[in-house]
Length: 235
Image (cartoon, one colour):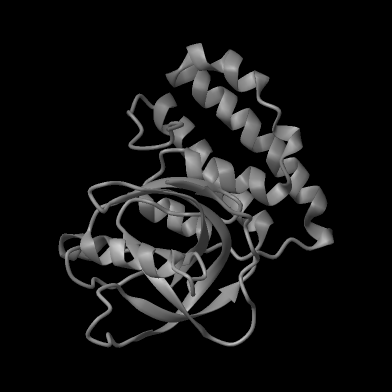
């Protein structure tokens, strides 16, 4: 069964409970969608609870600290800042697994975690929403940074994937708002999880743009020096 639902805004205010979906290599950003395959029993339970009659269809994605990825089967420590998402599409498979599309809504900061009640297999934290800041005084800087991102991407593709330049040029990026633009690039470029986490933790949209431009230019410098970049390729 496949469902399509509208994307509600997450509730602001005081700390609130949110189911956690920890991953080691996927960083969700607001206004960006990511497909997921849910197979572990604890996260299958999480999806059932989130999409049941009283479910809010919201889960929080948080990245495991790099030094603890070997403990994914347990409850490894997480970065404090994650991104909440709403389950927009859901396909229940005969095996009990799920395919879903998660739409990022807003960043959150973990306050603390709630103890398990004995029946719940997945983690739940109390979180506070951390909306992105994009004040009017940053508009000129953001506009310049958008141009810098596109220029750096064209230069990067010219070096590593020239066959993709024409398709890239056809993309109508001007249709994207400032947040969707920078977050879409941050999500789709193959940066290391810790680099993407740094982008997510930027409170101001302009700061995220500046960090993204810096990462792209660093990859270009690596290529110019003859080193193969470890990341920085469109997925």
